[in-house]
Length: 159
Image 1 (cartoon, rainbow, N blue to C red):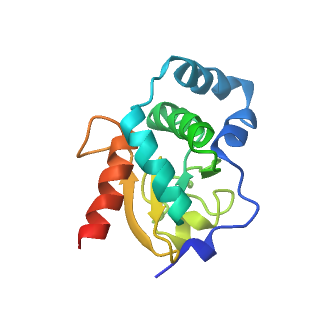
Image 2: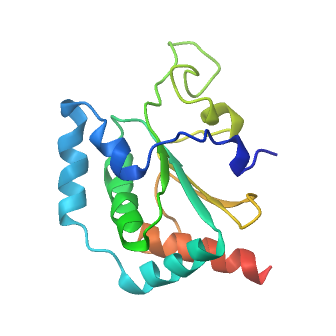
Image 3: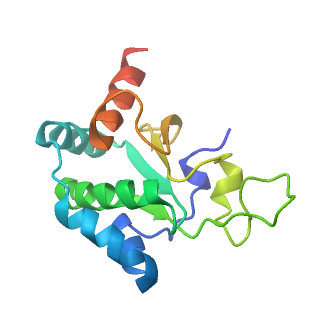
């Protein structure tokens, strides 16, 4: 099973990933970042969790609408918690007829390592670097991404 150690050490932060996007895609990401309001209670919990050693990593396709909603939230979150949320963009679809979900390369190698099937995929790692949960495309259990991250971490601690 892959771990946090399988994520490249030079992965950009969520903010840097947005800044590196082409102008064609960057506008939608920036609009979401400018308009979104974080749930402060969830932010405070995530800050504590990341201080304990929990880590968040995301993978996404630049053109993906769900990524356009999620990655800016992670950029805001990293600013609030004072820790980078590693973010690997550039996922691309393979040629028609391929048996793969994503073309690796040019998609990040981590797409295959973590068996990513959707964009975005947000991976949450515990203090030992073990994946404890993921958000695929959109959060499913809570109203916001930041609340979903809290739920995944809290549920992992209860088990």
